[in-house]
Length: 222
Ligand SMILES: C[S@@+](CC[C@H](N)C(=O)[O-])C[C@H]1O[C@@H](n2cnc3c(N)ncnc32)[C@H](O)[C@@H]1O
Image (tube, rainbow, N blue to C red):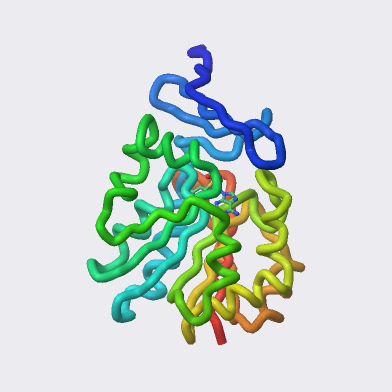
């Protein structure tokens, strides 16, 4: 068994450690001892980018906000499906994650950070959502494990009624809020509907076409 090698680590604002590890051509990002993501399993991250992009690709100059970057799979999938006149703002809270994407993880986003359609915002996606008003055709959120956070307690606010209303305000008419989650959450679905969205719940395979499923909410602003 090939051992995991520590490539780099950083301390998150709350004091927890985030680390990047490599084993052969496989990478993991961990928060503390828990795995945040693994480069071998990105089917649902790809689906998140594809589904959100397909929902808005017929719009003129579509504007998408993606939070966060992770290993860049969602960004790559979105860029593949979006037209050439699209604009994508990628928000990433952790500077080391951006460095890793420019270094050992660069192939996973297929050079996404260098795509002329992309602008990187180093900071909290909640701040961009909070200050926006009818600015985005799509907001794509994969900042954690879903409504049950893992990396940042402060992310919980994104999933509260106030956070969902802020996302609703930030979207253009008919805009789409796409949210990734490790599991289904019926109470959260109700909350999204209450915030003024029509909701499609999409279970997606974590990897390939069998086995474990993750969950995506595709919520359209009414
Ligand atoms: C699970 S990963 C995202 C995976 C990504 N969808 C992909 O395809 O690789 C979560 C990322 O969100 C970042 N993050 C966490 N909270 C954030 C926030 N409030 N604003 C922006 N980025 C955040 C984390 O540092 C991490 O890089």
